[in-house]
Amino acid sequence: MEKTVCELFAGVGGFRCGLNNIKESVVYSPENNAKEKWQTVWYNQWEPAEKSTQYAHDCYKYHFGVCLDKNGNDTTNIDIEKVDKTTIPDFSLLVGGFPCQDYSVASSLATSKGLEGKKGVLWWSIRKMIEVKQPPFVLLENVDRLLKSPASQRGRDFGIMLACFRDEGYTVEWRVINAAEYGYQQRRRRTFIFAYKNTTKYAQHISDTIGYNSEDNDSKSAIAKLLGTEGFFASTFAIKAIQESKIKTTSLSENIGDISDSFQFGFENCGVMKDGLIYTIKTTPNYSGKQITLGDVMETGDVDESYFIPEEQLYYTNPEINRSDESQGKLPIQQRKTWQYLKGAKKLLRKSSNGHEYIYSEGPIAMIDEEDKPARTMLTSEGSFSRSTHIVRDRKTGRIRLLTAEEAERIQGFPTEHTKYCDVNGEVVEMPLRKRRFMMGNALVVNLISDMEKTLSSIIDAE
Image (cartoon, rainbow, N blue to C red; front, side, top):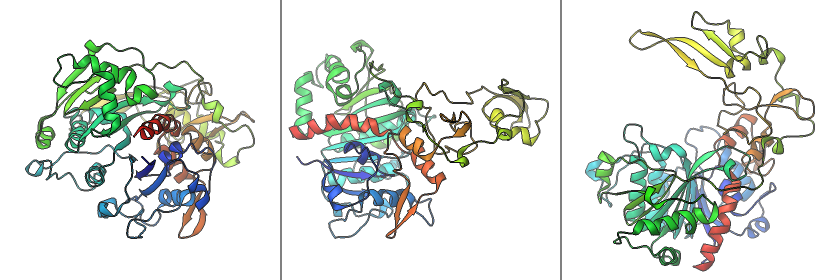
């Protein structure tokens, strides 16, 4: 089987960089693309919120070029819902990252052939691609809260996703992975989903290896082998031994409308769905190797002055103070516009919608990020005046500053300067700094995909 890929909602190419172990920023050329181990036959990156620019797509295009459909058209940057999926070239692996949205369906049309999800929810475009193209393997990434969404009906959305895969003849594994717990430079928890057709040699190999039989009362023993040592994620990211007695089970209704209306389940951070049966258990990473830290990816030379924070924006009082009390009245605006105030603990007087006054409390977070630990989770708001923004002590001068765009790239495992340039209608332009940070806050940790690639490669070779 050829190593061919379709990358949906591609961003700036995290899956592609990981699958091909790209360590240095590249500029598109046929020669560079020909060297890639995994050949991307088509991708899509359309950002509907962008009115005049498509920086993510144009950055991807700068590095990797475009992919034409079977009709010779470039459809990589149009609304995925408008793309005729039959025109997409065939591929062996579908990859993508997509938002955690409301996946509920219209019950009157919720049969396997008449699904109607909410318009604009990207999961339904993924499902349509799977339905039309029937790829042997699928690898997806989402936020960890996917497993507990929505708050009013825990587990419903993930249950709908699993049912969609079941109806198309797939087995699905999932694992919530914190990149830092496997030695990488960011404390970022994400749900990864690996699905494979039940007709693949891999599916048969797994069933034979673990001795799985859905009719067997001792199926938990087989599932414990799959989740503990033999499955896709267990083969890639080791975990501590699991107890089969702690595996929780449930089954999916045949009708997705019923799942949308009433399904609830406490999904754990690891599990598998086979033949509509769900098995899940909480697992613990088992890693004892090297730990990359924030300090390891920080600049050691000169940093542009624009990244440094003026003293008056850092502190409004003694630097040792990390809390403020506004229960009796707000501090002056100039004090509240400091990082010390923003990151410190707070007591604020607030009023509810019915007029009731109450005290809102917020705990402190470290103002200066620790260099000897992996970076905190990077968000799309990185670099803005936000509690989540990283503030570091410059390694050369000792002064306090924000992360550079290149440091943000390295925190996500991208090549340095990967987001610097874009191809906009054939003209090379620089991406704005705020957009470079946004792209990284929206990306995945490329290192994890590089680890998964080793397992994927052996699976595809065996097909």
